[in-house]
Image 1 (spheres, one colour):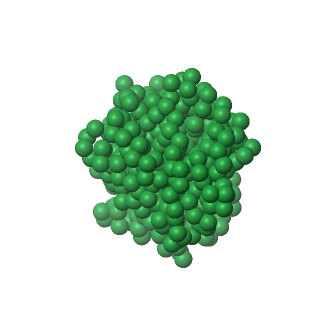
Image 2: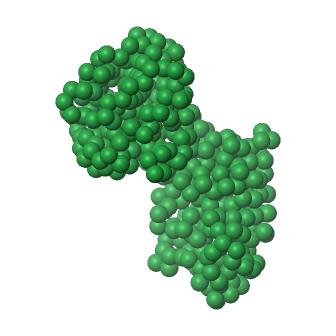
Image 3: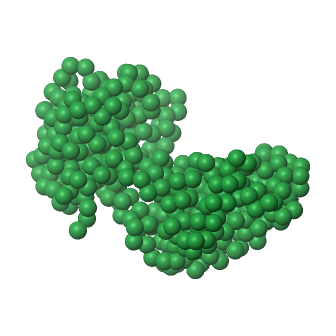
Length: 401
């Protein structure tokens, strides 16, 4: 039995459902630059409507910090959302003043959707204010959380309201939790974690949690340079954190004690500048020129990591292997992503990836649709990888008991 309820566990017919989605889409000159989150939110909305429910839809957009700011209004979402709702009636309340939200919700009929204005226009949202949570709860009979990307926030629409109404995970939330559970809570071994990025300091909790869980830890990006520095190597002008050398050595020691195989680069692509078209050269990590910087993993490293991937049953990926935004330093990320994708397509591997840079890198590599699951979440995905309890998930679990 699941620790949380899903849409399968509640009867929505004739009921009004408060759905917390993540419609925090990127806007470009007032238009929507990427409507992926809207498309994903529509999945649960349509299922609820088909089940005879009416839906009160809530989300945040940007960081207005408790003030009504026109540039953060959800109004630009309306047309794009309507296009995904297959003709369902959609209305919008453009503010939280008075009782307009309550009045509009009270008039909803089965099969209709009401989109409320940006939750973060109200200071009670981010403060997880009891009164605001109660106000949200008064709008509906049932609460559905479909915003895993916000699950690490103890906000009124995520934590507070989930404790006041019968609550369930929406389909996107359910899919995310099932994928993440398959990756770390009950994975098939061998299990590898591919971790990249610039700094050990920003991913220390992640590294410490993973090394106790995984069989192989494949480290790339600039954070790998700090580990090389800790090993006494001269890394030239490569980006690193000299003040984290002792921490890097501690991680390597504890990983060995946990029988976690840590793979650092053995060769790298170097250049004298970071720019598109900069001339790259191959160098062993023991012979990085003093006037050059490492910007990507080299072919020997790529080949070895691809071999490891081929032996694994589960792979978790967070962070690129190099400066993937600049060609030709996207090669390591692209080729390793392709190796993971091919094993996934062959049915021998479950692959889970997440994080903002990771998503962008996998899209650029043409691999994001070839992984088992790529999370749209950023901070929530990282905090989950670090083993933290996420308020949104804990509230659903408590409600599910």
